[in-house]
Image 1 (cartoon, rainbow, N blue to C red):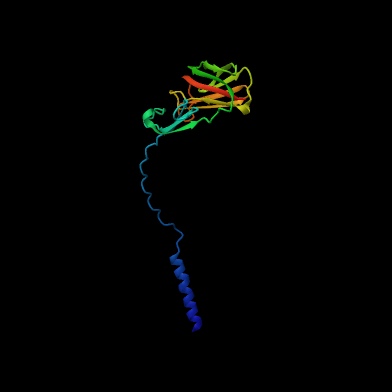
Image 2 (cartoon, helix red, strand yellow):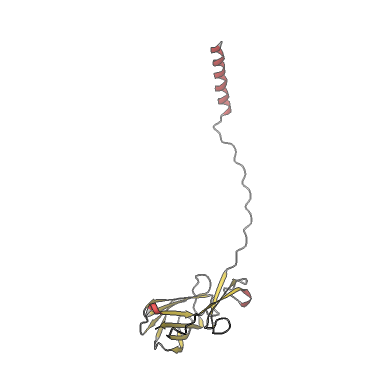
Amino acid sequence: MKTNFSFKFLIIIVLASLFSCSSEDGADGTNGTDGTDGTDGLNSLISTVIEQPGTNCSNGGFKIEAGLDTNANGQLDANEVDTSEFLCNGDNSNLSYSSYVSLISQSGTDDPQSDIVENSLGLTIDWTRDAPGQYVGTLDNPVIIGKTVIFFTTPTTHTGVRGELIGDNQVRIELQNGINVFADNFSNLSFELREYE
């Protein structure tokens, strides 16, 4: 009796496993429909201008403005400025320096030209156009890199300027009109090379 029951039980389990397992996959469900694309976001822009000595900065400095380019013209217009901050020069009464100050202009594929405003460093800077929006100024006398800083403003025709000393007798400036979009044609970019004693 015992053997007969175990054998019947084993047959039931084998039959159940054969009918309950299938090697075929079930049908895939249907994919949902894609949503509609959103609209592109607005670009954030930053503008830097020289702040003359006065109420906002007793020793002068820079005014930094930021906002969204709501009209998508690549420039930070006055009505697009959301915030502004002042980066003021410290009290430099105990630090003496000599400087070279000029207004730089450039058009087409020409090399930039300078109108010198002040030159207590006694320098001559020869500007050449490296590529669109990228320029190298070669100094006729070297400066001490660890004691020299450069200041510049962004022309109203552009969205940003980057500058750096690339040696003791060369400086590079790059003008942008959009994010990493270098562009020529500007006027009266204020440029200062200041060497502290």
